[in-house]
Image (cartoon, rainbow, N blue to C red; front, side, top):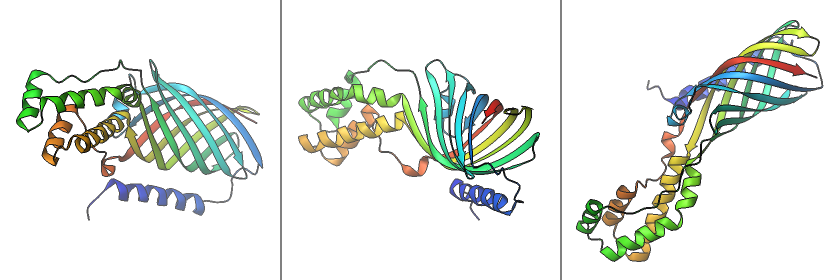
Amino acid sequence: MTFTTQRAGRALAAAAAAAILAGPGVARADFLTFWAAGKTDWVGGSGDVFTTFDSSLGYGAALGIEVVGIDLWGEALAMGSDQALFTVNLGFDLSFGDDTRFTIGLFTGPMFFLFPEQPTQTLQFDADTRSALQAAGISAGDIDRIESKYNEVADEEEELSRLAAGWNLGRLQTTLEYKLAPVLYIGVEGMVGYHYILTGEEAAADAKSGVVDQVARDQGLDRDQAVAVKSAVGAEEVDAENLDGFNYQAGIFLRLEL
């Protein structure tokens, strides 16, 4: 049987749900709970977006609300200079214990990545690239028009390149906490999520592909000529099959619960 990340993701979600539903009914009985936490987490995952951070260690905060066992919470982690990770999580959890508390939860929700702004880079083909494009049958005038059309949207693509967004289809979280005071806990946590993420570079490459397709239609370029231009400018359509993977977090936190 072939192992795939899709099958692994479904198995993760199913196992977490089964564990929670099968567990004894010892969950908190509070109708409404607000909480806030300061946290330090190690962050990792599959895909280039996680290796772009200056550091794998993030510092930040989380804020949440629980209503009759349904949880909504978000977190923000600074991952370096002008770099950050944000997540929003909706799901449910069960807790066991009082002074020492173990909690397991299953969530879904979006995630966002922010990276430093990069200077706008305009397109200007070098002599070798121009020669290669002309050898593919593209006239010098069409090459000039391709440069001009691309540079019209260069600012938008540079803005895209500093962002990435995704969705955790399933995110399993476990925490172990110790009560320091009636409303104050210190604890450790671990999380694993199965996600789809679209990076800014992938979005920019897809946008370039759209620009080339438009120019190809306007200038009457054939398919081979359009492919040559896409190769020259780094344009590539997004392949949805390459967007999935796993992300991981582990860390410590100080939590205030009301």
